[in-house]
Structure formats: structure tokens, C-alpha cells
Length: 425
Image (cartoon, rainbow, N blue to C red):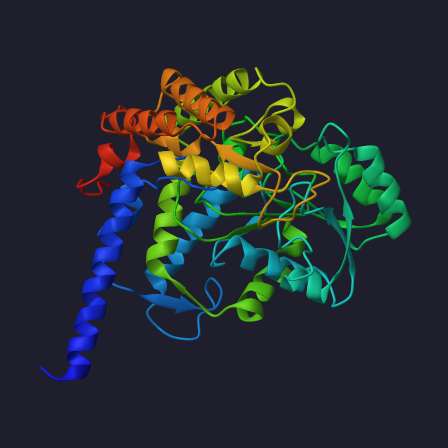
């Protein structure tokens, strides 16, 4: 064996070891990162072993062999429309960021004005952050939240009437409350703007009636199945009928080329599952667990931004309550086996890589079968450690307690229930 072969064999060995380490880590930690979800194993089944791709739009492919692919994509689009009461769906985007890019390309020209939520108030980086493509190509103006952290719709109207944007964007990555689409639609109509809702986070809540339906108020909706829907990665665009051609052409050939059959199939399967009673039960358990978090964290006034949550996530102001910057709180909890992420808050003073708080959610623990009592235990461990960040004995005891906690096999765990099972159709 020559030196080059030895080098690549060594890299392969290291790669496999790294993957095994990540797998172990996933089972040995409590993941409260809000976008994280332990996707059901059946969406990674061996039902489709091949890596077939197709290019182009439905029924308009540039090469042969796409008849079955068309049927799979049609089913995925049909179910998406049914779940969200939409006229049209495009399930091809590789991510919701790319879905947003396609929507902007379809409905805007470079330099057009867009009104969106500030990043520090909860907005996403594709909603106009100046280091993102969205902020580089379009003229974004921003609205924020009031002193209590809630969206101020009257303030949005004032800004919209002054700015006169061509598009308004709602939806967020860290806003924990419901969004009033009716009010936003009324504002958009007054200024003649399109209304785009990026709803990746609450998508699972929407299809079960636990979050307001965006249609018919929004013109376009984007989301990814890999958060509260517990599905595979990817992006989906929903829109009104009159915008369907513009949206489709912006996806292909606008921002991407081919799409994989395997992912489209798993997306369709996931969307079908989202319409079943079992998924509604999951969302009910998720919201119960969030209320447990809310009750425990409410013992510290001012800790929760907006005082709680209507959704699967919340933001804690750790700096105000415990004197811990977001990155410090994140590291402290990670060391004992609880994953969160540092999070900027309204009127942030430190910036995104330090931040004043942390964001956490209950999607992962609920999908892993955690009950209200389990969630209460996690909340108490979090609070005890945030309150006593230098107590090394407490940290060691907490880590041991969480290790025992994670060793228990639970009902409704999407990993334990599905792993090693064949997909049945």
C-alpha cells in the first residue's frame, strides 16, 4: 500500500470514528436547541436505495425516466397544499433559505424595498441581514417588538406606510408567540405589498391547528419539514394560484437545478404522517412540555422574553436574571449534557456570538418520549445550574442525573420505536 492510499484509509477511519462519536453524543445529551428534531428513522429507510435525481419542473423534465418521480412529487405537493390550505406547492428547494431566495427572485427586483422583523427581535438571517444574500440584493427595512417583546402591529403599519415596501416578511427563528396574519394582511394591502411568511418553526403546530393558518392571508409561505414536523431536511414553498408560475420558474431554473428522488419521497411520507392522529398527539405533548418549562421558568421574573411561549420554543434572558451571557450559559449547560444555543434578545447589547440569552425548545425531548415530569426535571436542573454557575459538585451531580435519565427507554421515542424497522407501506 503506497503513502497516498494509507493517507485516505486513515481519513476514512477518522471519518467513521467521528460519525460514531456524534451518534453516541446524540444519545447522551438532552437537546433543547429549538430547530433540532430527532427525525423518525423511517424517513431514512432503505426503501429507495438508489440516488436518482430529476431536473426541471413537474411534467417538464429535460430527460427521460421521470414518470414515477413526477407521481412522487405530485403527491408531496398535493399533501402540502391540503395541510396548509394552499393553492400551490413547490417541494423542490434544498432548504428554506433557498426557498426564500426563490421567492425574492420571483417577486422582487434587486434593490426593491422589503419590510421584515429585526434579527435581534427574532427574525431570520435570510430576512435581510446585511451579511446574507437577502440584505445584499434587496433594500430591507425592519420592524421590531415592543418593550415586553411582543410584535407591535400598529408600529408595523406606521413603518409600512412610510417605507412602502414591495414585500413584507413575517415569521421568525426566535419569536415565541403567535403571529396575527390578518393584521399583517391588512397592512400589506394598504401599501400594495406581497406578504411572505417564513414558518419553518411553527409548521407542525399549524397543521394541527395550534398556530394560526397563514392562508388565505399570506401570498407565499415557506417552511422546512425538519423542525416541528420531524421530517427530512429541505424546503417547501406554498403560494396562491396566481403566483405559481413565477414561483416555480424562480426555483428552476432560477436558483437550483436537480432534486433527489429520495428526499422528495421522504418529504411526501413525512407530510402524510403529519395529517395522522399520532402526529396531533405528538404536538399536544410538545405544547404540554412547553407549559411545564413556562411554569418552572416563571419562578424567575423577567427570565422569559414575552413572559412565556405559545409555541415550541422560548428565549431566556440569562444575563439579566443570572448575570450569565448567552455563550456562558450555553457552555455551562452543554458541560452537564443539555444543549441550547446562545440567543440575541430585543435591544441586544453584546451581539450574536456572545448574546444576552439562550433559546430552547421541547421538540427533541418530546419526540424522544419525554413526559411532563421529565421536562420538569430538566427545567429544575437548568435553573439550579444557572443560579449556581460555579458549583462544580452540582454540575457533576447534574451530569450523572441526566446520564441516568437518558438511559431510560421511553414510549413514543421516534428513535427507539423506529430504529431497525423496515418501512411498511
